[in-house]
Length: 299
Image (cartoon, rainbow, N blue to C red; front, side):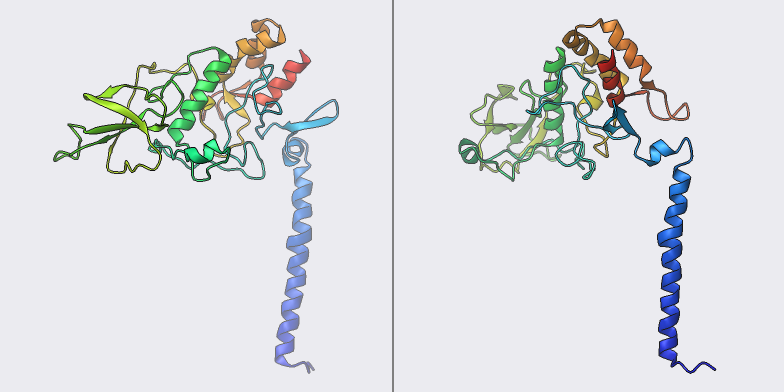
């Protein structure tokens, strides 16, 4: 005959359920999944797809990483990865995207007083367009090609004007009274001298241009830039280990010259490390940067 009070019986039943579920979900299930993960063919991926050179782990084939020096500059003897917005860049503990969209074309410029004092303005922010322009210019200079892109200034910021003046019925400023290059801080010389007969001014810190009509200027850059899109945009995770074949081939000449080897040898390695489309139709062919650089060091 059960003489325990009803409340105590319920607490004991709950405790038994907790213990049973802890054993099943906290011990048996993890052990079972770990056992399955060690099945040949799955073991490498389950352990992180780690890549070792001479017994030393140098990275993962699934996680992108930078190939830069202590100063952050690209190491010319290596292929470079995509840009990254994960933490300070390629941080696997802070995977993230910029969350900036195609309409993010206006920068928040730093306070010149802070810049002069050698301090950082925490409110300053480069828009997506300027980020793309700056990266394209830098890659173009590194690879010795034209880094210009539509809607970018030669200095590597977004070519965007604020056109001020009365608006017509459609909200368009047809007769400007003032035009400002929004992403070029004074005393910079604007990327164009005039717009619709009005002299273009640089951006004066503290001025309010919010009433102006935002006008991107395409410029004379080629419709198909020499620098591929993946060289100037970060992936959604910030940890993409691959680059496009086009970006790899763009870097081949620089890598070959730095290493003093034939460019044909470098392009052959690119071909070796080019993966096809998933299931034959999804995505685009890509090149694993870490694995390619490791084989370069072996050659």
